[in-house]
Length: 87
Image 1 (spheres, rainbow, N blue to C red):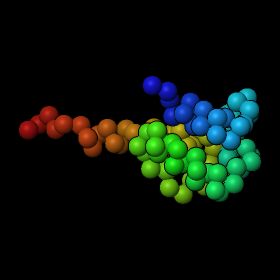
Image 2 (image 1 turned 30 degrees about the vertical axis):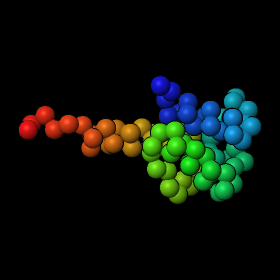
Image 3 (image 1 turned 135 degrees about the vertical axis):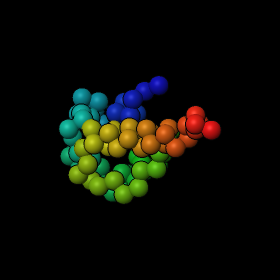
Image 4 (image 1 turned 60 degrees about the horizontal axis):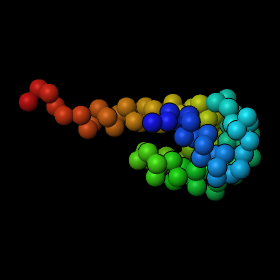
């Protein structure tokens, strides 16, 4: 299964025709030339792929920051759906 960063990168390069060499963890979506509508579209695509809701991602968020947010959300989701071993 691809990492969150890989999912973000592939979504950006496939959907918005960005050069993969420019899609690095320290780049912001604003620096990549995305507008707010594109950011919403990307969030919906990532939500469809992962089940993680990505509401209101700021334009100045870096790819690395979004990947970390997705990883935390995935970990939280796993904790809340894990069977309770104490019962």
